[in-house]
Every structure is written in C-alpha cells, then in structure tokens.
Length: 414
Image 1 (cartoon, rainbow, N blue to C red):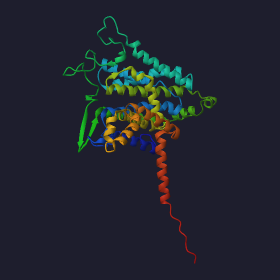
Image 2: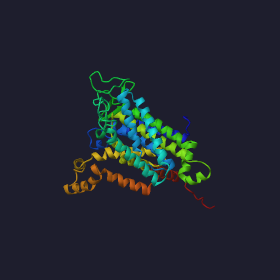
Image 3: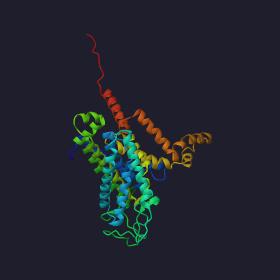
Image 4: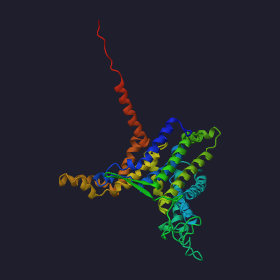
C-alpha cells in the first residue's frame, strides 16, 4: 500500500494516528488542575510540533543518510518564511502558492550554497554552511532592510525586502492582486486555504477537559505526513542507498568509479526544500518573518532535534522535535510559585529545599535540563529516543518469552 513495506506502512499509520489524536493525547489533565501545567494541546504549540518535525525530517535526509553535518540550515528556514510572506503581500492569502514559492526559493538557495559547501567535507563543510547562514542573517537583518528612497518611500519597500529587526509583516497597503486587500471590517486578512482561515479553531468540552481542534494544525499535520511519507520513500530507494554509501565510505565509493557529488548535492537541496517548507508553514500560521529564524541557534536546534530523536531513523527527528519544543514551551513556564504550590504539603524547610533543588532546571534554566538529557542520550543512547524505545521493546519481549517458556518437569523413576 502506497508503495511501502508493511513495517514502513505501520510506522506511517502510527505517525498519522498520533497527529490525528494529538489534541486528546496532549491534554491528559483536566483544566484547572495542578497538572494542567503539563498540557500541550493548544494550537500554537501543536503547530510547532509538526512544523519543526518537517524541519528535522529534512535535515535528517542530509545528516542521517550522508553524514554531512550542516550548521546553516536555518538559512533555508528563513528564506521559506520571507518567500511565503512576499507571496501573501503581493498576490493573496492562499497558503498553497505561498508554500510553493517557499519550497522553490529555498531549493534554489540550497543549490547555490550546496554547490560551494560540498566542495569540502567534515568540519570544513559544517563551517562553510554556518558562514553562509550568518551571512544570510546579516543580509536579512541590515543589508536588505535598508529604507528605500524615492517613489516607493511609502510602498512595499519602505523597510527593504526583509523588514530588518522588526521583521516582514503584512500591511493594509499591500496590493494582494489575487485576493482581498482588506477584510469587510477593514482589517488585514489572514492566511487561509480556499476560505478556511488557518487560525480558525473549534473547542470540544468533555467534563473538565477542553480539547481544541485547529484548522492550521491539521493542515500542517497533513503536510508533515506527506513529508514523512516522502522521506520513507527516499530512505528505501536506490538513491537512499547511495547516500548511505557516501556516509559509510565516500573514498571507497569514488574508487568504484561513482561520483558522489551529484547525490550529496541532491540530498542537500532536498533537505533545504524541507526547511523552506517548514519556514513557509511558520509564516502561514503566524504571518511574520524575521531574521532570527536564520540565526545560528536555530540551526543548532535542528541538530539537537535529530540527534536526540535518532539520526538516520525515520521517526526519530519527529520525536526529537516534539521533545525539545515541549521542554521549551512547558518546562520554561514553570516558576518558583508553581513549585511552591506543588510542594505546599511539606514542612516549610523541606519545601524550600526541594524547590531550590528543582528550580535551576526549569523556567529560564530549561536549557540546563535539555543539555543534561542530550549528554545522557549521546553517552548511553547513541541512537536517540528511538534506540531507547527499541531497548524497552526488546526487554519486554524477552520477559514475555521467558514467561511463555515451558517449565521443565522430571518424570519419577520406575
């Protein structure tokens, strides 16, 4: 089915089930309870889960298959966001053309950067991609954000191509030649899919639980499933086998008479297009594109996502993206007041001691928790969260096999 083997099809259906049921799975605690702090089933965060999942899936095609570690993939994320925003400003608020332009522009940008960077390998390749990303950040932050003089002083290019520090935003003066310039109430229109606004949502109340179903999240979820399906086909294709050969021993591959450069460039461009798609979706969910999306920390984040989930695995990058975005948005919101509420039943001295021990690892210190988890994964689980789940599965299978093993009996001698 869909050209996939049974194992891959089950994995695709598993990811589809998680995506479909995410509003329920991410809201396990009732509203108003002390544990509701850990609920993550609101639209903005769920959209981040799937969008950064797409970003990590694309990065895994490059890093997981070829072993080329890029520290500049955020450049394509930013290019995708700016491209989608310009499509919204010039033509209309339909998200499909905006995503198409985001993918195309990021792909062209990846061809240029990849052609130069892939002349080197190892740490030199990583440094080159980082340099290109920081140059892109500088261009977006200042060079391409210079105020324009002349007849366009109050037009589209008043703040340059990128909007500078404040970012590229929608305005009432944007032409939008294929769509409405303003809404009936005189406001700026929002991104939509053939009339369905990405910000529209429906709530379902079941007792003390509130579940939110967002059009933007499910649209992004469908895109992620398509991207995930495509990554499976790439992993299982002869092209994917060539990329694994590059990772295994590129020099030996060259000795056989095969030129690995076209394959690595293709992987780089595909990975960049995935990042551009993620950037376009970010602009579609929140119509704003800023230079911070090109900064080196954004590139480092996708590296952490891929390694934490399991580089070279199919579902690992999705799990890593979800784990990091969960910690970033949930753990970072827990403050000392919440901790004191949780441990108020303890004696004051013990309560203050426990809060003092936990507080450095949450709130603004959530990066410390992420760093410890990442260190433990690298040391004890080189295969990431996927390897951890596989070990747990094998442990239960071994235990079940031991339980099912018949007990040896001894017949009495006659």
